[in-house]
Length: 169
Image (cartoon, rainbow, N blue to C red; front, side):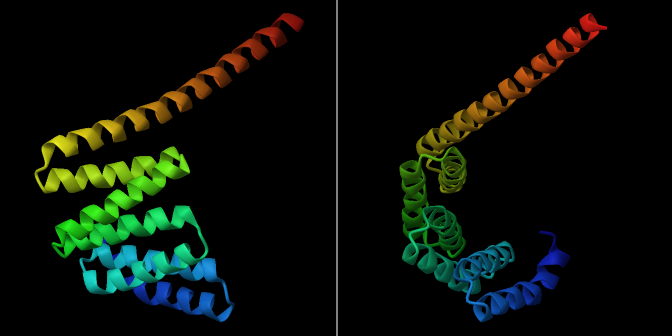
């Protein structure tokens, strides 16, 4: 989000949050809180960011929505790091990573390992930074490899289909 958007977005997101409360959309409330948490994290307004991420985290825990828990923990961890609360940031980001592993979802493992890589790189714990960078990159490579294999397979099928069509003609 660009700086101008950061200044324009809060009233719209807060209105969306208000509407979600009015229509009793608890999932929408949690997601709106998370969006506001990210917005205020981007502007380094850590106190307000933490309030919104905490609300989204509490909702996701209550509804046992593990995906939302992972994202909220990453936001809270980045927020704690911004507030220079290094032990809390490490705990939250590690919790996000561990939760993502239990979910067995590559996308969340990628996001949480990237967050831990950034954290350890910035705190100059290069051994752990290297580990999480390798985890992040190898998972990312495997996702791209699968996507590329699927694309090649689709292209190969199209070519074979076109060959058969031209043989028929």
